[in-house]
Image (cartoon, rainbow, N blue to C red):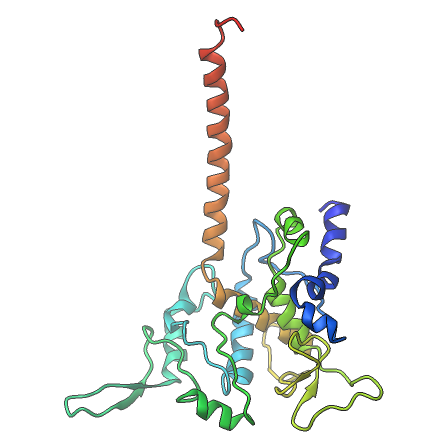
Length: 280
């Protein structure tokens, strides 16, 4: 990576507030969004299936009590380029969830264990129940969170992004948010029931309590069990959930670009052959 590209990527976090949340900047809050290294970054990046499995484990043990993933089916966990669970593993995961189905022959709804074709159920029956259980805050669905929380970038940053292929603002923000619970500045009073977070785009205070801590989820592959590692694994999993076919898209894009280059070359040589004997 050239020095220019490194300089542009280093300026990304500072640009987020200026172009993505001018109202917040005007209010004096400047979220501290760090940039991280991702295996799926760049035109040839791919998902790390081991990281996705770890992220899913963190989601199961920490997040799913409040946040659903209504657009993800259990069978998606087996897809190539994703967490790559085996069929038996995916079936065992699905069996731990209860799905409300029906009506049956008598017109009644009933409960059954989930199967691979089912989607992850919401932990709450409706939005009102979710707010009642979370002091009025509505826990968002995590299916598209890595895309939904990617702040919009204006000129000239989106131009630089074309050349640097930077498209990981969502995972960067989620990781920064999960690790951004710090002590408030001196003199800053935190409202009751809220927490200070220096990466939160919507303000300085967030209703969600710090969800992660060191040694919270047990990893069996030797990966460090730190808050930052949990946050990165979780963010990678959310990125896959938001764009499960990213690898196929990149492969197709490369083939299209290669075809266009070859096609342009053929057109050039064809033009040269046709006009070779014509005087200009």
